[in-house]
Image (cartoon, rainbow, N blue to C red; front, side, top):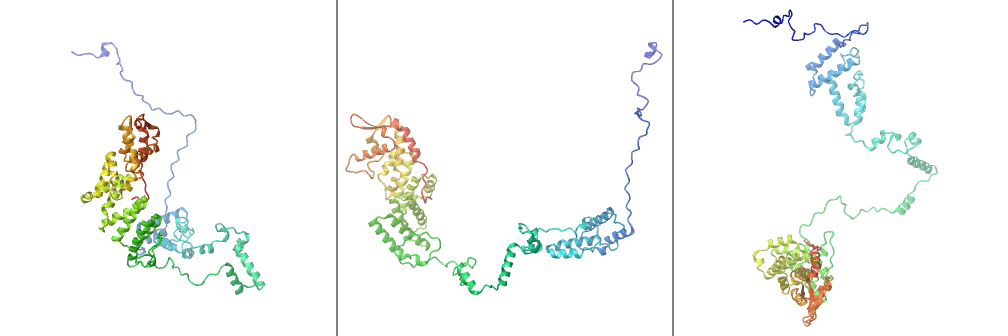
Length: 524
């Protein structure tokens, strides 16, 4: 069955348009005036540069192998050729230059390099530039400015005389001359001297020898003799071949700090030093004058040092000085001797190593230096730890490290050698630390008799053994000195009690202040 089109079925004689048709014309802008617009000028075509036959021959001669110069790159030659021809064309000199005699580009490059090489001598450069000023025709541009522009070379140092010779006075820096200086080129001082000299010549007043001699005497005569001092610019004297050997025979000699190598006549030899040590020890026992003894021992140590003497006498001198300084509580001098003794003992020179090793442990306890104590314990051998004095010092260290004040005060009563002098320096702070611990442990109070026994006041230096009340009085004085007077009470039965619960904060503060870092002169 055939279906009829839609326009037939609806009885319409024309088809229905389903899309809008495109316009069949091109839109143009309407004219506003009757004048025609000016046509757009076309860009001007660059005029072709016509090279003359002379220029072409100049270029050919530049590329000829016979005209090549060693050391000049062809690329540099082409660049220079381009610069020369371009500048000539821009300045309108392309036809006026005589290209038959004009230097080739490689010759120009060589000339420029020669002038740069000769720039170290300003006079030669100027003369060379003046002589070559007319060698090439004038040409504006970079090449023409090379011979006319003055340049300053920063690498050339001009002397002061050359500057004065070339610079006029009125152009010098800091010039204070007036018009007269500008005209004559001389300063006022020079003119004044010349006028004075002319006046003397006019009056026949010449300086005779007597006048000059009197003038020298007035201002001081310079001796014509050379100075006996050795110039610092002279040769350095050779050092002595070996150690110094003294020749001084004095038994007593004061100590002076050296600022230069000593003379042999001021240093005592070994036999004299042995006699001096015996004399110092006997005089110390009789007079007990520490200032004199310390001065003599330091002088003796100095003579041993400058002569490089290290033997049994050296060890004995340092040990004697250390004991005397320890007895007088001069820890600075003691520590200097102790440091030297430690080095001497390592050399195997003998001496009382056990005694001074224990002193060193106790001294480190006094300084509260934990790092030094660790180093000391690491250096001790098994044999050292078996020595009685060293074993005692290690027990003291162990008791204090563990806070066992009871054991420490028992050890304090039995100190070997002169270790008691070192413990006397720490006994007060350890008693304060023990009181802080007792105040925390015992409440509400403790007996004064208990504190006297526990803090080892019965064996104190100031306690009289014949007086039974001397130790309690010493303990009571210690408590009152450290702010515990208000905490002491006497009971009805006569027993003296100390209040621990009220005084705990006081002794805790005193403990912190007592264990601050100790700084000793001469400490390691």
